[in-house]
Image (cartoon, rainbow, N blue to C red; front, top):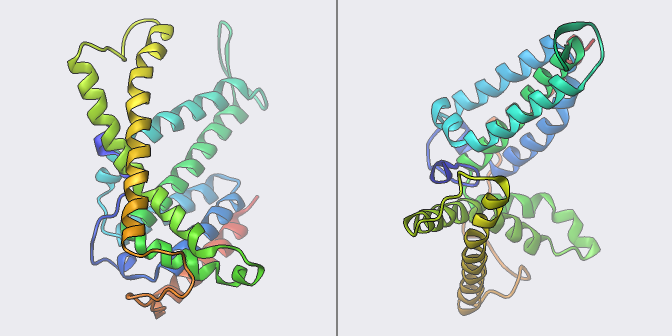
Length: 265
């Protein structure tokens, strides 16, 4: 499962979404996160879900690949759904069996919150899958450019965020290797009482932290050897180019906001 995690990975391609300016994609995702909260009924969430699937289709990323790579996230999504289903006690009573009671508002909130969580995960995953880490760094740095006037280390912040994203799949792969090595030595994390499972995780976490610190040290050494001294006076080999498709994407997002507001109850 960890080897199939796609969050933070970049898949080269030639789709419309791949060719978009990273600044437009970052703005698109952040605005979309805010727009999601405009929806508050079945029509609104159905439109949001359809819009998200349209973006996935335009990115030419297979839906099966996306779902398969986000299986750990779906576990959290299912947990969130049942949390609202069983603990929200508002509206009409729909089902009762012993101490289990399901209310109309609990079912409604469980579905809506799950859809909201799903579209946000899909959209952020599309951003990382279609944008290289260096492009994300450049995009964030340009967008945060005005904050340089108040002495904010924009380049360093952008680089730190980009490296963090890049290290997610690397650490997942490393976790998978360590887990297989521990299982080969007789360690069993997936069975037994919860107390024993927690104890079995410790031999997994220690080598993972050691490996992470070693990778960070190697990366810092490599950057110093190559003369990295921060963002002061740095130039870019790849120049960002805002195109008509980038403007249209934000216009499309404005249209989505208008439609959601129209159907808002």
